Length: 265
Image (cartoon, rainbow, N blue to C red):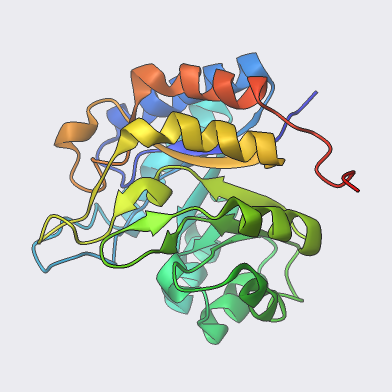
Protein backbone atom coordinates (compact mmCIF):
# COMPACT_ATOMS: atom_id res chain seq x y z
CA UNK A 1 0.00 0.00 0.00
CA UNK A 2 1.31 3.44 -0.98
CA UNK A 3 0.66 6.04 1.74
CA UNK A 4 1.53 9.05 -0.44
CA UNK A 5 4.48 10.72 -2.14
CA UNK A 6 7.74 11.81 -0.57
CA UNK A 7 9.81 14.30 -2.58
CA UNK A 8 13.28 14.44 -1.08
CA UNK A 9 16.83 15.36 -1.97
CA UNK A 10 19.38 18.19 -1.69
CA UNK A 11 18.57 21.80 -2.51
CA UNK A 12 20.96 21.83 -5.45
CA UNK A 13 22.90 19.07 -7.16
CA UNK A 14 26.53 19.21 -6.03
CA UNK A 15 27.95 15.92 -7.28
CA UNK A 16 26.90 12.54 -8.64
CA UNK A 17 28.27 10.72 -5.60
CA UNK A 18 26.43 12.88 -3.09
CA UNK A 19 23.09 12.80 -4.89
CA UNK A 20 23.35 9.03 -5.37
CA UNK A 21 24.01 8.54 -1.66
CA UNK A 22 21.05 10.70 -0.68
CA UNK A 23 18.70 9.14 -3.22
CA UNK A 24 19.66 5.62 -2.17
CA UNK A 25 18.95 6.27 1.51
CA UNK A 26 15.72 8.18 0.86
CA UNK A 27 14.47 5.39 -1.39
CA UNK A 28 15.29 2.78 1.26
CA UNK A 29 13.33 4.69 3.90
CA UNK A 30 10.35 5.40 1.64
CA UNK A 31 10.18 1.76 0.56
CA UNK A 32 10.26 0.70 4.21
CA UNK A 33 7.36 2.95 5.22
CA UNK A 34 5.28 2.57 2.08
CA UNK A 35 5.75 5.93 0.34
CA UNK A 36 6.30 6.57 -3.36
CA UNK A 37 9.68 8.30 -3.63
CA UNK A 38 10.67 11.16 -5.95
CA UNK A 39 14.28 12.35 -5.90
CA UNK A 40 14.55 16.14 -6.17
CA UNK A 41 17.41 18.53 -6.75
CA UNK A 42 18.02 21.70 -8.74
CA UNK A 43 20.37 22.26 -11.66
CA UNK A 44 20.14 26.04 -11.20
CA UNK A 45 19.06 27.99 -8.12
CA UNK A 46 18.16 31.13 -10.02
CA UNK A 47 16.43 32.79 -7.06
CA UNK A 48 19.41 33.77 -4.89
CA UNK A 49 19.51 36.34 -2.08
CA UNK A 50 22.63 37.98 -3.51
CA UNK A 51 24.92 37.90 -6.54
CA UNK A 52 27.35 35.78 -4.51
CA UNK A 53 24.89 32.90 -4.11
CA UNK A 54 26.03 29.56 -5.55
CA UNK A 55 23.55 28.48 -8.23
CA UNK A 56 24.42 24.92 -9.25
CA UNK A 57 26.10 22.81 -11.94
CA UNK A 58 23.78 23.63 -14.83
CA UNK A 59 21.14 21.69 -16.70
CA UNK A 60 23.20 19.33 -18.86
CA UNK A 61 25.75 18.29 -16.21
CA UNK A 62 23.09 17.79 -13.56
CA UNK A 63 20.64 15.83 -15.67
CA UNK A 64 23.36 13.55 -17.05
CA UNK A 65 24.04 12.61 -13.42
CA UNK A 66 20.29 12.23 -12.80
CA UNK A 67 20.11 9.87 -15.75
CA UNK A 68 22.72 7.61 -14.18
CA UNK A 69 21.06 7.77 -10.74
CA UNK A 70 17.73 6.83 -12.27
CA UNK A 71 19.37 3.93 -14.10
CA UNK A 72 20.97 2.62 -10.90
CA UNK A 73 18.07 3.12 -8.47
CA UNK A 74 14.94 3.28 -10.63
CA UNK A 75 13.70 6.38 -8.79
CA UNK A 76 11.43 9.06 -10.22
CA UNK A 77 12.91 12.53 -10.68
CA UNK A 78 11.76 16.11 -10.01
CA UNK A 79 13.56 19.33 -10.85
CA UNK A 80 12.53 22.96 -11.05
CA UNK A 81 12.37 25.04 -14.21
CA UNK A 82 12.50 28.80 -14.64
CA UNK A 83 12.01 29.38 -18.37
CA UNK A 84 10.20 27.77 -21.31
CA UNK A 85 13.61 27.19 -22.89
CA UNK A 86 14.66 24.98 -19.97
CA UNK A 87 11.46 22.97 -20.36
CA UNK A 88 12.20 22.48 -24.06
CA UNK A 89 15.76 21.35 -23.29
CA UNK A 90 14.53 18.80 -20.75
CA UNK A 91 11.91 17.47 -23.14
CA UNK A 92 14.40 17.28 -26.04
CA UNK A 93 17.46 15.97 -24.22
CA UNK A 94 16.25 14.30 -21.02
CA UNK A 95 12.66 13.27 -21.66
CA UNK A 96 13.11 9.86 -20.01
CA UNK A 97 14.89 11.30 -16.96
CA UNK A 98 12.53 13.91 -15.49
CA UNK A 99 9.07 12.86 -14.30
CA UNK A 100 7.98 16.11 -12.60
CA UNK A 101 8.55 19.72 -13.66
CA UNK A 102 8.43 22.09 -10.71
CA UNK A 103 7.43 25.76 -10.90
CA UNK A 104 9.20 27.73 -8.12
CA UNK A 105 7.09 29.76 -5.69
CA UNK A 106 8.19 33.16 -6.98
CA UNK A 107 7.16 32.11 -10.51
CA UNK A 108 3.82 30.53 -9.59
CA UNK A 109 1.77 33.18 -11.41
CA UNK A 110 3.89 33.31 -14.58
CA UNK A 111 1.24 32.35 -17.09
CA UNK A 112 3.47 31.54 -20.08
CA UNK A 113 5.76 29.35 -17.96
CA UNK A 114 2.81 27.44 -16.49
CA UNK A 115 1.20 26.97 -19.90
CA UNK A 116 4.47 25.68 -21.35
CA UNK A 117 5.02 23.19 -18.52
CA UNK A 118 1.43 22.01 -18.75
CA UNK A 119 1.71 21.46 -22.51
CA UNK A 120 4.09 18.57 -21.80
CA UNK A 121 3.00 15.15 -20.58
CA UNK A 122 4.93 15.53 -17.31
CA UNK A 123 3.48 16.04 -13.85
CA UNK A 124 3.66 19.75 -12.94
CA UNK A 125 4.28 20.67 -9.31
CA UNK A 126 3.55 24.34 -8.61
CA UNK A 127 4.90 25.86 -5.43
CA UNK A 128 2.34 28.21 -3.86
CA UNK A 129 3.87 31.65 -3.49
CA UNK A 130 4.57 32.90 0.02
CA UNK A 131 2.43 35.94 -0.81
CA UNK A 132 -0.75 34.04 -1.78
CA UNK A 133 -3.85 33.05 0.16
CA UNK A 134 -4.92 29.40 -0.19
CA UNK A 135 -7.94 30.31 -2.33
CA UNK A 136 -5.73 32.32 -4.69
CA UNK A 137 -4.42 28.98 -5.92
CA UNK A 138 -7.64 28.48 -7.88
CA UNK A 139 -6.47 31.24 -10.24
CA UNK A 140 -3.22 29.36 -10.82
CA UNK A 141 -5.05 26.11 -11.45
CA UNK A 142 -7.21 27.83 -14.09
CA UNK A 143 -4.03 28.01 -16.21
CA UNK A 144 -3.29 24.27 -15.97
CA UNK A 145 -6.14 22.70 -17.94
CA UNK A 146 -3.74 21.18 -20.50
CA UNK A 147 -1.72 19.31 -17.88
CA UNK A 148 -1.78 15.55 -17.42
CA UNK A 149 -1.46 16.00 -13.64
CA UNK A 150 -0.86 18.98 -11.35
CA UNK A 151 0.27 19.19 -7.73
CA UNK A 152 0.18 22.25 -5.46
CA UNK A 153 2.84 22.65 -2.80
CA UNK A 154 2.39 24.69 0.37
CA UNK A 155 5.76 26.14 1.42
CA UNK A 156 4.82 28.68 4.07
CA UNK A 157 3.33 32.17 4.06
CA UNK A 158 5.16 35.43 4.69
CA UNK A 159 4.66 36.65 8.26
CA UNK A 160 6.38 40.00 8.57
CA UNK A 161 10.02 40.29 7.56
CA UNK A 162 12.30 37.25 7.12
CA UNK A 163 9.73 34.86 8.56
CA UNK A 164 7.34 32.22 7.24
CA UNK A 165 4.49 30.40 8.94
CA UNK A 166 2.31 27.47 7.91
CA UNK A 167 -1.40 28.12 8.35
CA UNK A 168 -2.94 24.69 8.80
CA UNK A 169 -6.45 26.07 8.42
CA UNK A 170 -5.32 27.08 4.93
CA UNK A 171 -3.83 23.66 4.30
CA UNK A 172 -7.10 22.08 5.40
CA UNK A 173 -8.99 24.41 3.04
CA UNK A 174 -6.80 23.37 0.11
CA UNK A 175 -7.23 19.67 0.90
CA UNK A 176 -10.99 20.08 0.85
CA UNK A 177 -11.41 22.56 -2.01
CA UNK A 178 -8.68 21.93 -4.58
CA UNK A 179 -9.17 18.99 -6.89
CA UNK A 180 -5.43 18.25 -7.06
CA UNK A 181 -2.92 16.62 -4.71
CA UNK A 182 -1.55 18.97 -2.04
CA UNK A 183 2.10 18.69 -1.00
CA UNK A 184 3.56 20.15 2.21
CA UNK A 185 7.10 21.49 1.87
CA UNK A 186 8.35 21.00 5.41
CA UNK A 187 11.83 22.44 4.91
CA UNK A 188 11.27 25.68 2.97
CA UNK A 189 8.45 26.42 5.41
CA UNK A 190 11.02 26.79 8.21
CA UNK A 191 13.23 29.04 6.09
CA UNK A 192 13.94 32.63 7.08
CA UNK A 193 14.24 34.36 3.69
CA UNK A 194 17.21 36.74 3.49
CA UNK A 195 17.73 36.56 7.24
CA UNK A 196 21.51 36.13 6.99
CA UNK A 197 22.03 39.22 4.87
CA UNK A 198 23.54 37.61 1.78
CA UNK A 199 21.68 34.31 2.23
CA UNK A 200 18.57 32.86 3.80
CA UNK A 201 18.48 31.36 7.27
CA UNK A 202 16.13 28.86 8.84
CA UNK A 203 15.70 26.30 11.59
CA UNK A 204 15.58 22.61 10.66
CA UNK A 205 14.66 21.70 14.25
CA UNK A 206 11.02 22.53 13.48
CA UNK A 207 10.74 20.17 10.50
CA UNK A 208 9.74 17.00 12.45
CA UNK A 209 6.89 18.74 14.26
CA UNK A 210 5.71 20.51 11.11
CA UNK A 211 5.66 17.29 9.12
CA UNK A 212 3.75 15.43 11.84
CA UNK A 213 1.22 18.26 12.05
CA UNK A 214 0.69 18.14 8.29
CA UNK A 215 0.14 14.40 8.40
CA UNK A 216 -2.38 14.79 11.24
CA UNK A 217 -4.33 17.37 9.19
CA UNK A 218 -4.56 14.94 6.29
CA UNK A 219 -1.60 15.78 4.04
CA UNK A 220 -0.31 12.67 2.28
CA UNK A 221 2.48 14.19 0.14
CA UNK A 222 5.61 15.79 1.56
CA UNK A 223 8.58 17.74 0.20
CA UNK A 224 11.72 17.50 2.35
CA UNK A 225 15.17 18.76 1.44
CA UNK A 226 17.88 16.46 2.74
CA UNK A 227 21.67 16.74 2.93
CA UNK A 228 24.42 14.64 4.47
CA UNK A 229 26.13 17.77 5.84
CA UNK A 230 23.63 20.65 5.65
CA UNK A 231 25.77 23.09 7.63
CA UNK A 232 28.24 23.08 4.73
CA UNK A 233 25.70 23.01 1.89
CA UNK A 234 25.97 25.77 -0.74
CA UNK A 235 22.30 26.78 -0.33
CA UNK A 236 19.43 26.38 2.15
CA UNK A 237 21.62 24.53 4.63
CA UNK A 238 19.86 25.98 7.68
CA UNK A 239 16.52 24.46 6.77
CA UNK A 240 17.63 21.16 5.17
CA UNK A 241 17.39 18.09 7.41
CA UNK A 242 20.31 15.78 8.02
CA UNK A 243 20.22 12.58 6.02
CA UNK A 244 20.77 10.65 9.25
CA UNK A 245 17.47 12.05 10.61
CA UNK A 246 15.37 11.40 7.51
CA UNK A 247 14.00 8.04 8.65
CA UNK A 248 12.80 9.47 11.97
CA UNK A 249 10.88 12.18 10.12
CA UNK A 250 9.21 9.73 7.74
CA UNK A 251 8.34 7.42 10.65
CA UNK A 252 6.70 10.37 12.42
CA UNK A 253 4.70 11.27 9.32
CA UNK A 254 3.37 7.73 9.03
CA UNK A 255 2.54 7.47 12.75
CA UNK A 256 0.52 10.70 12.61
CA UNK A 257 -1.23 9.93 9.32
CA UNK A 258 -4.89 10.93 9.25
CA UNK A 259 -6.41 9.34 6.21
CA UNK A 260 -9.95 10.74 6.34
CA UNK A 261 -9.75 14.56 6.29
CA UNK A 262 -13.13 14.96 4.58
CA UNK A 263 -15.41 13.27 7.10
CA UNK A 264 -15.81 15.98 9.71
CA UNK A 265 -19.27 17.36 10.37
